[in-house]
Image (cartoon, rainbow over all chains, first blue to last red; front, side, top):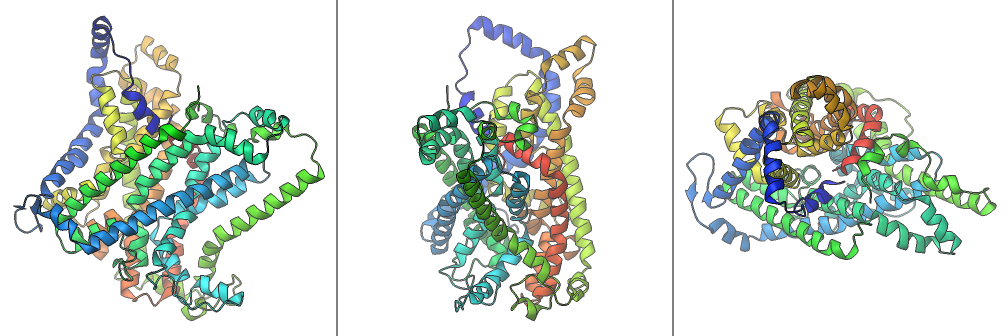
Length: 318
Length: 304
């Protein structure tokens, strides 16, 4: 069961009678000490590395702070400034485009290839490795360096286009119209991780469902619509939620492709890249903290929307 | 959908034949044609996926000006100067950055294995007050963007004098902040029969003994998956070292590679490609030998 379905089942736990509660408490008492001892490193981390810093960043988001002087309380000024910060708006537009286009494209590629591979193919381990490898390398700076070259004026892509007689003279990463799309393409290229998850899910669907359907004369497309999609929907949902959360935090590729500027013309200014510039180049820690909290709200909203609509299309079986 | 984990603990479900294969009757001509088309499609897709990587390797043995006019893979001459020049073209020989990266990776793996196994054992096997709440919080941190804690973390580590050391990169791992691995291990432990623990209790074993003598040896695959993923993600991690490591002597590989873009104004592509290949080799080797565990681990937990 995935992390997501775990979360949704926790609050559905049954209410217990006082008697049961008393028994449980007694039983729980036995392991309390051991439980907290084993959990100690995690608890310290939760307080020092996650919880404490979260509270601190919430506080900092109401201040001006540059690491040198003590934080100066400014109330909601940082949040108010976001409303008239054109670069922030641009970075939101860039990031939303990346998430809303890149994530679905990547998942569609992953699902399509997984379905092809699942149909009892010869050479499955070979294909799986080939498709999986890019997703293991894709977040590295080395691949971003390669991407940068590939989409230059005389980069690999244009060289190949010219071989086919197309007079390609665009610098894809130098043109604000296309630069973001090269990074979206890089995201799609790393479809291997969700593909592996889809493959595992597809193997859980009993073959007899398809057998029965073909006896009834159902076309392959109908089988996909009526069998594969519903039975795979919890896994599609899981991938969708996690990939959206991750895609909102994309940073490395945009940083390397634009050499940290988010250019040309801010066309690859991802939200996290802008946050980095504000916080760690200009040392406006207060503004960066406010931006981080905006990101939390956006991600939480997207996750909530996802969960809300999941009722309409995610099928949890029995 | 049934519990993925229980079924996936059996390796054959991943590598064995797909269910449909069993019901396939004698292949007809139409089936063969279909299969051929599929293979052609998949081979074409494989070539598109892998070509950039092969071209990167080939190009790393070419002078820069040749790189920009050769889309093919064939090498007429092997130009190794990219490697020898690239190795020495930053403030320190590239080996320095590789050593730094290895220190961080080894530290991160040790930290994750130490802290995540402990936390996972507690969550999966021990009953204690507020366990459900802590577990839910742990799952929520899985979804928390790193950026919301990075600013205060930086201020804290800066105040403690840990900027330009590896402490900010390693210490959090010893505190199980990678919830993904805690969850992965919880899932794995839940698949281990409880009767084993109960037998050990009857034999008079305490929790520590059950954990260290029984669970840890049984958790081999989960530990391997965690170690391999930690290697790959830490080796490629860019944001954290970019923030904390500003002194070139402390650079890890990704930050060093990135500084090439500044140092050579993005002109010496040959050397940059050569060092890119160097940084990809450890990733590739880990992928090659660890793939079995990666496939299993990612399918168990749903991956990242």
